[in-house]
Length: 411
Length: 56
Image (cartoon, rainbow over all chains, first blue to last red):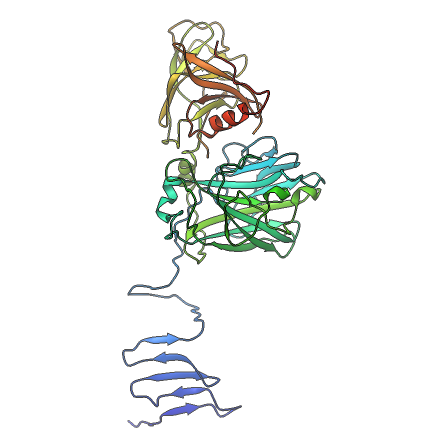
């Protein structure tokens, strides 16, 4: 066995400044361009000065430090638009407030002619996106809005310590596709804005992103500093609301990249989607996570996502009760998930009820009321009018094939 | 959100909920300030000409 003892091995081409440097005892340096690229020290630690690419698997027996996990918690519910209880895949108009995939509110206030639809056009790895299509060519007046938003409950973000000097940095990531290139705005606000009612919104931070190529899916990341002041909810009401502004009026315009004591959600120079006849904007894969690094979107099962959405919106198709009189039936409902607040109730269509064998009877028109104050986040007692021919006190059940009951405690 | 009408529902002489037409759909809304539909009805009622009707 023989060995060659040297302190350095360098290349013989060019300027001879790349190679192996072992001049220091118990240390090996790999240099390129006379700069250390990789260091192996006496404890067998390896340090790379540049990026490290691993083509195969990477196994870590110890702990990782400063490495973003691909499973960071996503604060957003239904970020992949999997759940669309209100409209399914149908298109809804700007006058149908909130008629969008679950947990996303649309707000086309003041004349923007837009429609909203869940579609199957999505980037690789996703099955759905939310598509906004504008039909008008009218520029928004100062108070108009065209925006989408999703709200987080205060109690779900209280640990982020917004409103204090310890407020945590958050990173928002999403996939977007738009027919118009240019600058778009996203904002965090402390209270969900509603039309031109913005008086309650006292903190906002606007960030911009650029759509570089028309009609092409692009991945965007925006990092928001934590807000050190202002009032932020810590209960079941508004916490942080994330707003995607698609071109609101000038009343909503503010400075970017800083916390404002205003309700602004729009940056100067923003694309105005509402004046582009046929203009489209799509989004999916929305993720909000702690820290300044965006990590990959983690898909939830349909079951998990639906359960999370049902805290805010449920469709109920069964229940048992009795006839109160010839025209009114009452039901006690148990909600599948504890809802965010006492829910409001509506119907998808007229309700049909049955006594189990002899007949089915339907309302002549939709009519639901809460009996007394008997409603809480886990259930309610409801009365349905506009029946005829019922027998008082006869037990009845909801016919699952007809209209259904809606429970809503949306933010 | 487009609210076209709202009317209190009472029980034993006390208002207990509001029945409203919101975006063309009939809703039974609890008197819960955390419910955003009730918040919207209260904001709507502040506008001149809008009133939550008294219960029958």
